[in-house]
Length: 108
Ligand code: HEC
Image (cartoon, rainbow, N blue to C red; front, top):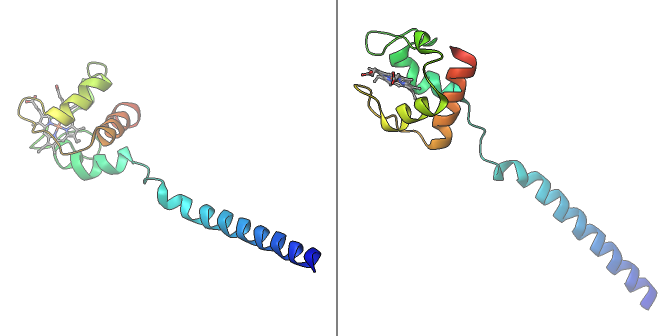
């Protein structure tokens, strides 16, 4: 008898371990924040004034000619604090950095 119950107990432990592992595994993606897409944010929050390619519009200047003069920190500061006639854009620092990275590394 003691042997059988010990076996059952070990089975129960195994089952519990499996359940916990599966449970943790499936809940993991939900714990991770959505990756921030600089490209999507650019289109959502900046392209309306600066154009989809940074070419500018009636409301915002062409940014393509500023390549090389704009540093990453300048762009983040411009987004967060605004610059001249551009109002600050309501983005978190992480979002502003993602947009700045996209703008400088991929778009312009
Ligand atoms: C409501 C329109 C508008 C939106 C939205 C907007 N901008 Fe601007 N942006 C401007 C205007 C106008 C200027 C020119 C500011 C000035 O020099 O007076 C400007 C200037 C800039 C500059 C140049 C700053 C400098 O010092 O020369 C950068 C870089 C820039 N914007 C990036 C962005 C990014 C990135 C976003 C999105 C997060 C964005 N802008 C959203 C209107 C806008």
